[in-house]
Length: 384
Image 1 (cartoon, rainbow, N blue to C red):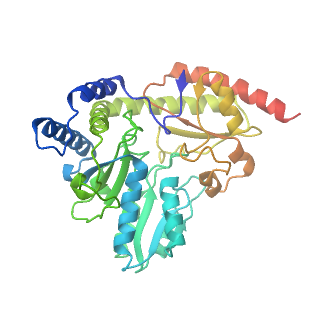
Image 2 (image 1 turned 30 degrees about the horizontal axis):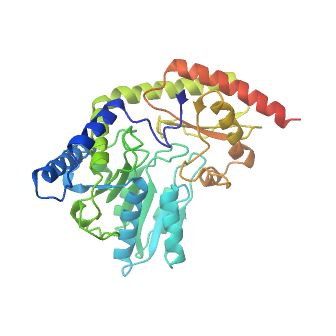
């Protein structure tokens, strides 16, 4: 099997599985309990929190655990909007956000909020001039995806923050970091964001656990009420084993970050080179000039259908996707590729290939051969 859908989810590392398994046997106490078993679980959660905080170079008191990126986005965005509604009702976001952000915006737009959707160029970069012009006294939030989940474009968040400061804007800045966390090198503190969402299963950790960074001093109100876990932000008994597994995944990630990033970068560069050599009538939708994550490559094979190609490759035990796993079962065209201004032919023929440290150059040779043969067969059928 060659798994190239790592933006959807990743295989849990064996060391993480071992840690989770032993934790189920040893760390079963409720972290809210006052006895030794509860205190032990609380200690393990604290250790995981500190591991993740060190990786992000922030204070551990700024890290809160959630069920994943979607919940983190919801807590941050909904809390900011609800708390700021008396100050203003204008929000700025982009046209290429993940559904967990885009659908929040749609919901609040229906409730009367004014939403500005920033345009992007054909590489997926947001229009910074439009951002500057859109800011006003009513703007309470700017919510931007750090690395786009379909095409891998990295947004210039430092410049976004500079624009907010230059305009003396009181708007808060939320960053969807689900595809950037552990995938690209950045200093979260220096970006100047107020909130930042991330997820465990995108970095070879377990599903069902994620995190939310909240800048120290920022008061975020809960949207779920109960036993006041996570300092009152997110009530409900903590997912102890998920959090421990997440912490272990980040610990291993931190130790291997440079080596694995370099490996993935070489693999993607090699794949781009081979695709261009072996297959004609293609369009690479991912920017390749350094403004994209090395973990994502979006390619359109003209005169084919991405979904058909996906199943052809699946028959050869190769797994890719056609877009966001959170919405890929829908029939609508990719809103991200539409925002890039691409033609229907280009959009229909697109697949997303997303890498991990487990993929080798030899794997890519096999994949290229499979893609070439599959594309030729699909094109022949479509020309009949």
